[in-house]
Length: 212
Image 1 (cartoon, one colour):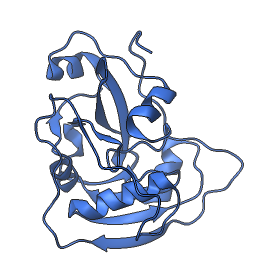
Image 2 (cartoon, helix red, strand yellow):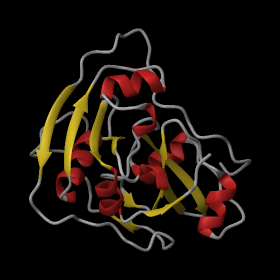
Image 3 (cartoon, one colour):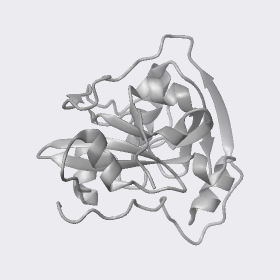
């Protein structure tokens, strides 16, 4: 619910299970990139209904939706699967990247039925004054977990722009450029390793300095 702007959420946490060796699969789709709207300050557009059966035949409905959207994006990416993690350092080690390359997808409320995704490097947090300036607004807030699920289809800790119920605008921190990054793929312990520049292009993201 609206209120004071809290800090960014920590990565998905789980306990009592050791990290397992990641399982990787390389995906290359030779089709042009499917770009989301390149006018991120506009309202979202609804996606087609999720299919409960997928030719990808992986995991949960959320995971299927994310993997289908990744396949349709035209990007070259690698799916990495790993066991539960408790910290950013563990998530980075499990995915084989630096902590800064673990990208958090944060849902931000701009107004009534008006949300956006903010992509934040794992070792940074949203800089709220910076983000407000980019969006040209005086107030932003973070929805509760139930609202975030209602508007994306994903539980908190698994949220990704790929396969979201609605194609909310994307704002990405400029530090994602020029490096390989890892972004969640719709389920705990499932992530996609992609080129940061390709990711920003595929999502039609507004790129700016929006973190501290």
